[in-house]
Amino acid sequence: MPESPIRRLAPLAEVAKSRGIKVYHLNIGQPDIETPQVGLDALKCINRKVLEYSPSDGFRSLREKLVGYYDQYQIKLTADDIIITSGGSEAVLFAFMSCLNPGDEIIVPEPAYANYMAFAISAGAKIRPITSTIEEGFALPSIERFEELINERTRGILICNPNNPTGYLYTRKEMNRIRDLVKKYDLFLFSDEVYREFIYTGSPYISACHLEGIEQNVVLIDSVSKRYSECGIRIGALITKNKTLRNAVMKFCQARLSPPLLGQIVAEASLDCPRSYAIRTYEEYIERRNCLIDELNKLHGVYSPIPMGAFYTVARLPIDDSDRFCEWCLNEFEYEGETVMLAPASGFYSESGLGRNEVRIAYVLEKHELKRAIKILGKALEAYPHRVENKQHK
Image (cartoon, rainbow, N blue to C red; front, side, top):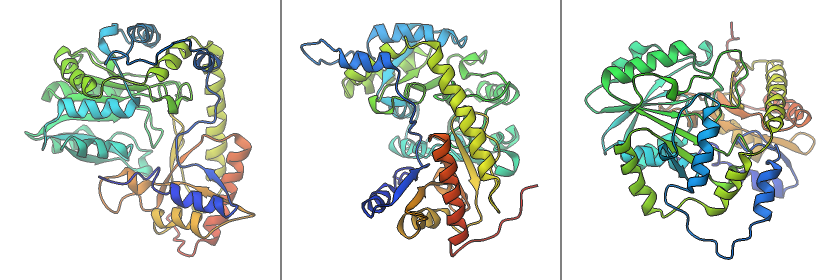
């Protein structure tokens, strides 16, 4: 079971704080945007006399309300297609446990969300990575490279769209190529789409649920954590039109009894938050993205492509080892009593040695904090004793 590159360094950050150092957290996708007031009010006004179990697939009222939410994205569902889970993480785990036997393989474009590997290990399955590169803006590798990995044990393809950690948004052409591959080899398509609200380009959002001819193959992963800034309520969803798969997933749902009661109450209420909340949040992230990329690319030896979605970017730094650099920032470096916490990108690749000069940065801080954090990063890079000059990006 691999350590999380996102949370592994948390003890070092706590020690730094105990020394009086201010730590700018650029390592984790924890938004500082306020949770919708309707969600907070629902939590404050709970009048239940008993905090009971909910149904194993979640409250039907929440699932029915979600049908309307997805309809605005032209994703046509029924309440029975939706299973409420304890965060998007449990949705991924249950999807893997239900679809994959020990020894089965899934193909995953990388860099990828680090916990996918942990969930695959939990299911006894193997991730076959297909690497995208910063030089190509982390675009989807060719379909020919996918086909080279397909064998008798291949059961599915996993994508994250928009992507965590790169912020890449798959094009319609890329999604259609994935669809054709899934159809040709009768694979599952696991599609993590928790960042659909955060797309910063004129290109349309193409959900796996929009792809014709593979409706029974698609497993959609979702969560309220990011769109409503509700990471702590642990409410996600696994969506499938495949009834056989749903029945398998339900066995795992029953084994863990039920998803969080209070979280479901907050999530259901939050679906009523005004459209203005989503617009303000979206506009704030666009400004943060632009601020981050401008400041990063001013630093000597640093390069980041412009992320088209989510609220992360992977940046290349003039360093020898991102794990060592991130630890050094917390253990040994400070500038005017402050330092930064980043996520080493090595943890987002399966193959050892990749991502050694890359970090994931989450732009979840206010712009003035973000600008200050990048200034401190620049000071850290100047002081780092193992600086290595990269070839400048062309």
